[in-house]
Image (tube, rainbow over all chains, first blue to last red; front, side, top):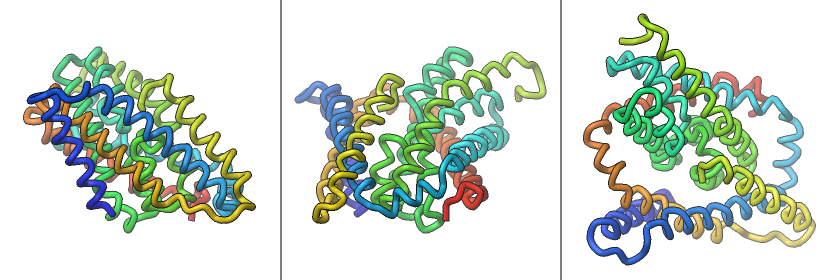
Length: 210
Length: 93
């Protein structure tokens, strides 16, 4: 199954590249925005139908209740800590790297936000690191589900509420829909705040700067 | 679909799907697997298209690609570890 997903992703990549650099057949916005959003809306709808038709998934959510919020908070904490570790490994600015990580995969938000505080160089990193998080989640979902049923949800971060949600549900089961969606939703809400809160530490002098 | 104002669109799509699914529950089983997978492929194609046509992203990859890959991989690893650790307290089996 994953090979079809990868083939579609690569085919799209090649088509997009050729369209932008060789001959413009379609306005790229039509595919990368309109078609993307239309398929996403349709998928979310269909996944909602499948979820509600399964009596077990609803009773599972009832049992879990608000405790489900522990998941996105754990992801947020893990991700923020990972930013510090990454910065130490790469030998780059700890605060900026942690702010980049705190986008939880939401690349269109993180790039512009970190660039406001740390400059254009960090915009590219904020964009690429979060975009790779989304891509890696899709590419490794079949492996990650073997580690843990909720590992792809953790990996997807904020994108678990939209772009990576279909793949996550496909591999982890219909009952993961609400956990993944709720987790992605909470992370998307807190992403701008955590990025800015961490970025504001940038004004604190050493030892936070390397 | 990662813009603030599109939050509600995502919630509305999933919510109306769940509303419909709830009423379809007693009806005979509808198999949505194939349709879903077809749309996933369209979604993946458009995601790929967005990346391929984004010259800015592609040009920045040689400079920041390695650091970005390290940041993303460690973020994924830590998130997975943390979720595994709290899974039981979150009531997930």
